[in-house]
Length: 265
Image (cartoon, rainbow, N blue to C red):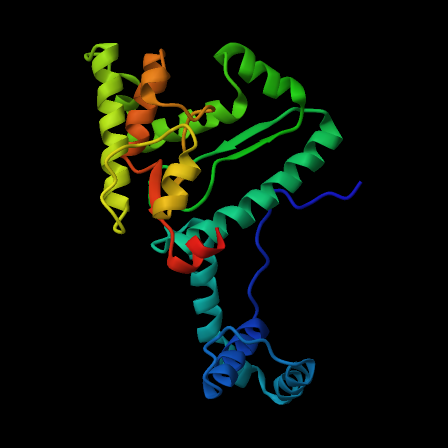
């Protein structure tokens, strides 16, 4: 069975040769106005190898030392740094989860140990969707049994809690009827704020696509409950609080389609 490296394996040391290649590739691409993203041919690498072999130890040190330090800093930032750009964070999360999943699958195959991995956002600006991975249906069934809800529903509720904090599950001062009115009001408010094509006076839950998307070009993203129904149809305070927190913290939101998106829809 093919296995992957463990997560605590020591990273390979960055050599002077690596630094030299990085420096020369950066220079090569900058001269062509491509930044540092363009790949080069194998013949270019062969030419670098020829030049490298002709250098003395001192020349190799001078040519690669500074770039080695820069590569090391970039590696540390990639592994431990905090991302300021949501897209970079999204790509990092996707790549890391893919690696973790392979390691867990291999570990499960070797040892029989079972794993459940759940990843959710902690900030509304993050782009990654909720992530769930399990090695056995028994884990999924256990979560659904003790929570009396589906695993996907549990994950969405967990994300709402992580984004909104304790308040998302402890709003108990309002009566159920008042809570329903509050949720309905904020949903309509968010819908009206998202639509610039017209003044929408009513939110439709039945045939939403026909009444809202088709007429006004607005879609709803990340509804946190398993069923899409009006707040007045909900009898669970917990579900109403989750829905309220989701819209208050922009976990769930309306988005106005661009004209091309609307025409394609």
